[in-house]
Amino acid sequence: MAVDLLNIARTGVLASQSQLAVASNNIANVNTNGYHRQVATQSALESQYLGGNFLGTGSYVNDVKRIYNDYAARELRIGQTASSAAQTSYSKLSELDQLFSKVGSMVPDGLNNFFSSINSVADLPTDLGLRNNVIDSAGQLATSLNQMQSYIDGQVKQTNSQIESITTRINEISKELGSINLELMKTQTEDPQLLDKQDALINELSEYSAVNVIPLENGAKSIMLGGSVMLVSAEVSMTMGVTPGDPYPNEPRLTTSSGNNSLVVDPSKLGGQLGALFEYRDESLMPASHELGQLALGIADTFNQMQTKGFDLNGEVGGDMFRDINDPLMAIGRAGSYSTNTGNATLSVNIDDVGTLTGSSYELKFTAPATYELTDTQSGEVTPLTLNPPSELVGGAGFTINIDAGAMADGDRFEIRPTANAASSIAVTMTDPRKLAVAGPTITADENNTSAASVSLNGMDPTAAGFPGVGSEITFQLNTATNTYEAFDAAGTSLGTGTYTPPEVNAFGISFDVSNTNGATAERFKFDLTFAEGNNNNAIEMAKLANENLMNGGTTTLTGVFENTKLDIGSKTKAAEVRVGSADAIYQQAYNRVQTESGVNLDEEAANLLRFQQTYQASARIMSTAQTIFDSLIGSVR
Picture (cartoon, helix red, strand yellow):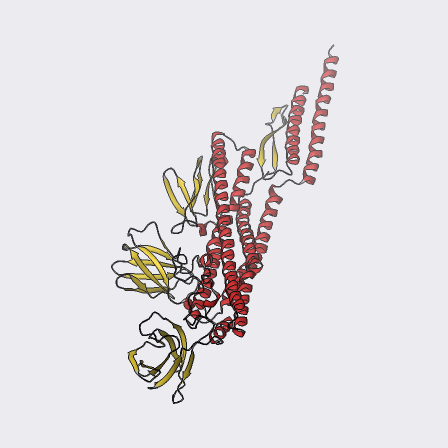
């Protein structure tokens, strides 16, 4: 019996020692990130049949379990992905919101100062100092647009850099997980320490992208990103990469590769920080850049057109104030060709009507033999384009696409960005204050006109055939029923006849719109092109543009284009802030559940420590008792 008691005591001491070790390890790792609580399970040794009874022979620790709930871990990963995406979106949008709200205020301020300088010169048309102030204000406005575009470009580069950094870290995690899988598959039992490290890496990975986990033997796991990209397959680790964008290289794409195979990844299906960064770049930064370009084109074209409506201080028709909107420097990046195209067509984009531009980007697709379709990437609206031989595609919203060289093949695609880079290229080309066209012609309706028809000057081209010249008069007689005209000089001599397409009449170097027509047959309008130094007609018309809806199809002022962009970004930022609150609440709930099940509770472990200490001491006491009994038996037979 003494031998049995010693053996029972020995097993009790060993089992209690193991329990103490597990509890101590839990306490030691209470602050270890990713650690899962461990529990030692005890079982009784097989009993022996002695003296007609089954007597127990002790206890042993048969397993040390890692407390892990796969469902709770999955919910934690999902919550982590959503929370990381929301936090990233809010952080980036907040930066952009601050940029437009604070730094960006220089754009509307510059526009207001520009209009203020025009008002001043309207009061004193011949003052060269005030004229020079207009040019200086225009230059400051152009510079503010340049700087704002530079800040947005900086945001694009920063976002691309973050994407590259995260991709590098994902590849590091992929290699580590592959190595852990290899170690786990070599062993016959699951190593809790390796499993904790594996779980910590997977949780970190879920910050960057949605993660799908496929269990394998002995705790090894294959990992998929976003449900479509295999990152780790058993011990094999795939790699993610960042390659130049298509068709725009400065907007990198995400790829995945295994061996010699490489595929482009759709970032919208990834979620997490990666998905949020791509979404921010493509759906917030780039549209903001395009709308800023839309404003730059609007400013340049509007005031260049206004210059052609008046006379400068030299008595000549005004020339451009800003760089022409179709200048090669302003047209950079308007058309991009996809690398998958099999044709060799080279395209350019010509802006025809700034007022109808929307700031959107488009996809142009060619289907043989002669179908051209333009799809608005924001609204999804598809517009068929018409080919005007030999190489002009018309039908776009305010722009024309030119096939400059080569030819398209069936299925070729192009991305069209009519307003791209305009804000970085806008510049003032006028340097001589005398060239500012402050004066303007006088347009008078004949007193015998019978309708409410009116005309508004679009511009003058002194290089056009038949232009009467500054200081002359020209009268147009319009038949609005047949859309024909006849022009007369100051002496009443006919200069010629022609037809026009309503509402614009373009003849003898003078372009004007006709409105409020009712089929009248002999409405006459006199254009007095006499120049006078004190005349401020054109400056007054320029000043009025501050409150006129010139953009987005006649619904928005110049300042309104910028304000709409700022409001849109502010709205997105507020929505992102709300998403952060919701996502964090869901994540915290999942985290608390995991901690409740797998985390270390110090109170519970302290109680266990005391309990196992007592069982250890009791088992040791049994050993001393058995020794005393054994000594008594030996003494009794001496």
